[in-house]
Length: 320
Image 1: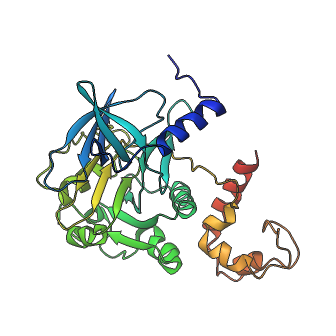
Image 2 (image 1 turned 90 degrees about the vertical axis):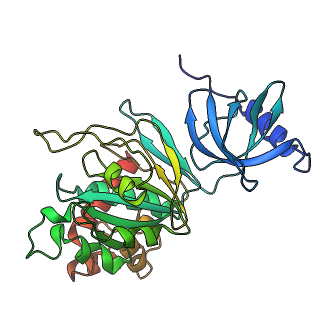
Image 3 (image 1 turned 30 degrees about the vertical axis):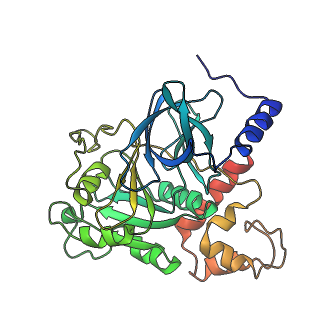
């Protein structure tokens, strides 16, 4: 059965009820969401040395996801979540039915996992980057299975050539050779991290490598398309040994960013946004307008042609 949508009046009532919570009440506590299983949510209390607890959800609280900060209290014989702290951001993905599904909240860093096999889809990568830029989430591009690459090719798929000049870290890793695993752990310190990517790129293997004491389910790789089955069924937040957190999410084969209506697509492309400041017209879409600094930069090679094609495709999709 589909969930009943809330009216504007109901949403206002819920917001007013949450704002009226007395945080000084000794029966009201704070914590953050570790995982969500059906009607119960696993919470880590903010108090020191407290064990994780399971809370029930009040009706009409909305979607609760890993990384959410919540308020809870004892109600009758159960612990119940009574309010949600305002979010810094909400990471979403498109499911197989074309519906947006919340993945994680309050994310500060996105680990975009690619691999030598299956070969990276750079348009998909640009979609991830657009979503991260709009929500002010830092990014590390992780190229897994580097042990399968040609040893004479220092930059498979030109990831470093395209993305490092834009300020994105491109980190080749290998689970087999344990290459750059410690470096990846260091990059995760101080962040709420989400690792994302299509099936078969090794998200679960990387999670297991940086969390060796945690049992992470890893599926077999298909001999037909060299992609693995979705082995992570439920999102879960893990604490990293050197500091920071990692939210492990179910694999996705497609990712459609949630567009901010107040932001242009160009603002999610660092190089296009930079050159757009020099365009003759402030509303330039960088397609065929006169004296467009973006088109000039494209002709001179300052903007990668593939990135520009990704921009055009996303612009067309946003206007459709």
